[in-house]
Length: 160
Image (cartoon, rainbow, N blue to C red; front, side, top):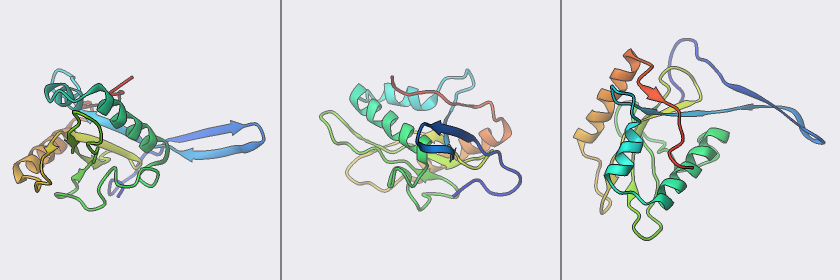
């Protein structure tokens, strides 16, 4: 699931806790969001444009935080195991509260290092609909732009 080919950066965090797990090395993950040309976070804009509740954005952020701490294994089902398009994966934030919608942003592993994931494009699923090809194509176009310019992404919190 990691980005393919070539050398990859790995982020290591050295943790020391008294009496517990002293000297444990944790391999951290980082989650990024694609940005507009002016540097705005497209996932944040998508959430605002679709009037996603603050409670659901907070839940999304909780899932991101857990993912960054332990990767895909810590948050099963957060990122689909099977890509929806070539190297494009669907992220799932279920609608479980009042006013919530089925958030399904698309992203990719990497593309610059192992243990990173980049959200590229937002989509809201309605009535278990199949992912439209044009939505996948938009994510792939943003992935292509990102591969040419690594500054077209940002690592920032969506909530709190």
